[in-house]
Amino acid sequence: MTDSDVLHNVMGEADAMAVYGDLKRTADFQGFAKHFIYGDDYRVARNALWVLTKASDDELSQLQPSLNDLIDLALHTPNSSVRRLSLNIVSRLKMEEDDLRTDFLDFCLARMVDIEEPPGVQTLCMKLAFRMCQFYPELQDELIRTIEAMDIEYYKPAIKSVRNKILKGQSV
Image (cartoon, rainbow, N blue to C red; front, side):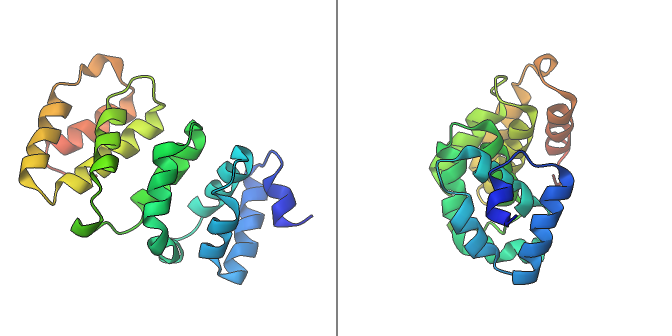
């Protein structure tokens, strides 16, 4: 069975690691991403993104030229698993001041407080918003005010933990 076939099926950890092993041998992380994560088949996209999360940060650095494509995927997918996994990949890539996109910052600020979002999406959005706001003190002040205004009783422990780290000035 080829990696393409496996990505169309329900995958377990062993399947993901096997596909990652094949990907690691070819070392074509960019080609793999372009081929599998941007299609309309959310199962394939989710599985491919899950495989990519197995990669080291050094291996994922091959995806740096696709940062905006990955951000667009997170912004526009209706699939929460694809959103969470694409945000995970984005969070592991470098983000410089020139990479700041106001649409992405607005997305992260809105999703981090949206109790309808899964906790994984909320925490990733909070971490990414914090990273983006560090380039601009006025944005950082807005982020802190937003985080302080959260009615924390409605959030899961993971969100509370990231929130507390940010409020204490710790890196996330």
